[in-house]
Amino acid sequence: GANRGVERAAKGGKGGGGDTTTFPNLDCPQIVEADLLHGEGIDGTGVTVAVVDSGHYSHRNLNKNADGQTRMLANYDAIADVLNEYNPLAGTDSAGHGSHVSGIVANSDNIGTNRDPRYAGVAPNADLISVKAFDSDGRGTYADVIRGLQFLLDTQATHGTDVVNLSFSAAPQSYYWDDPLNQAVMRLWQAGIVVVASAGNEGPEPMTIGLPGNVPYVITVGATGDYKLPVTDTDDYVAVFSSAGPTVEGFVKPEVIAPGSQVVSMMETSSEIAVAHPEYHDGSIYFFMSGTSQSAAVVTGIVALMLDHSPWLSPDEVKYR
Image (cartoon, rainbow, N blue to C red; front, top):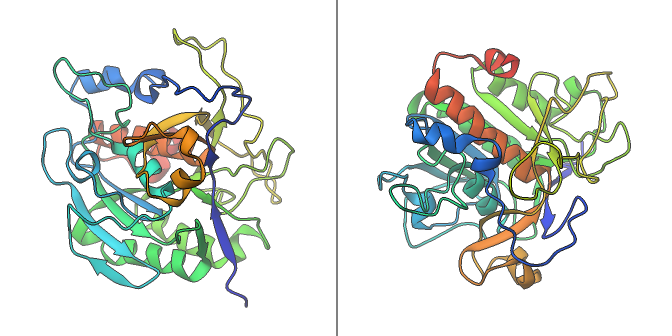
């Protein structure tokens, strides 16, 4: 069959009803109360997170964990089928999306004594694997994504991959079990890897869940909308763009929603998304964008914290909790 395309599940800047282009003061760890766990030493230590996306931003905040130790275990380019050697000076993300997602998961900036943890990752001490399956325009093919997922399966024993973040979405063309990309995702789940996928940004109409978020086994994440400080539950709502279930097969999706509107994370100024939307960049390393991509990354970080605390949990047990 045709090698169909998949697309990242995010868009620059405001979304979900946000009406400001001023730089938001959104602190994901605080909103999901991960900062309380960081204070107890639960920060993703010993957990390996793989991000299948547009590549790696080679910046200290991603290259090194909160303790200053190198934590990039592998940097695989599934498009070229090349395993890149670790190079703190050379990144592989010309789009910017993968960097943003990775930063939400694990940005180690501003962690520690007397620092401002505003844009820290949810699991700042997790180890990282970058799998590049999307090009500078944020497009990827089934073949590239499946090759990336196969790499994670083949290297699982070596790197101990615990959780994989899939912040992309495509319109389902068949039942979930017939789709080759979904079959690869289910193989990872069977192998003991927790899979977190974005619901997609085709909401708010029902039956708009994309793949691989339509796989009933995985944890599919929708997006919540704007937050105002101080943090309360009373101003949360499902973002208008967040895809909704049920799936064609009748499964309730998404299972969980997480912050996905105007989320601040890392992105090089030279990347395609930042060049297209300079108004959403702070001119240094931070950019804000909205989407279920961002929500999935938050939940991936939370899963890393769960596995730091309880490393024996199976994917099914993680999902159940």
